[in-house]
Length: 136
Image 1: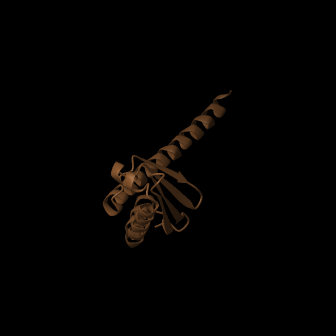
Image 2: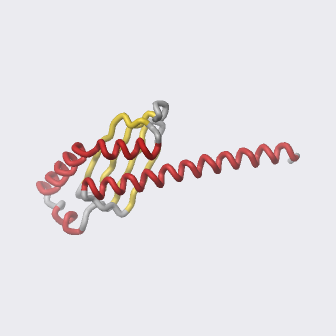
Image 3: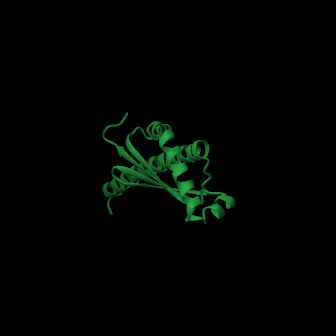
């Protein structure tokens, strides 16, 4: 390999590293923002958060969101339905806080969010529809 090809490869690797670092930093800030939101606004305490980024959406998966007593209560279908409805209604009333946090951390315009909760499986997910072209 000649020197000019080596320099081009080095430049490309440096650019990819910078993009990966920026991507990692955005996801770390998003994880912190989502964790803060679900803890303070919804009373959920997930043990793990996974963010999957697509072209126009972010899918946030929260695992192990309930305490042992809540998991036990959710074994009853009626109680599980009550838990689900309560958290979904709570989310609807405060989702603007999450929208602002996501927008602040990424600079992207947030078009909509949807919250799902499965108390029997002990996980929640949030789908965030974004417009990267309509940035702040």
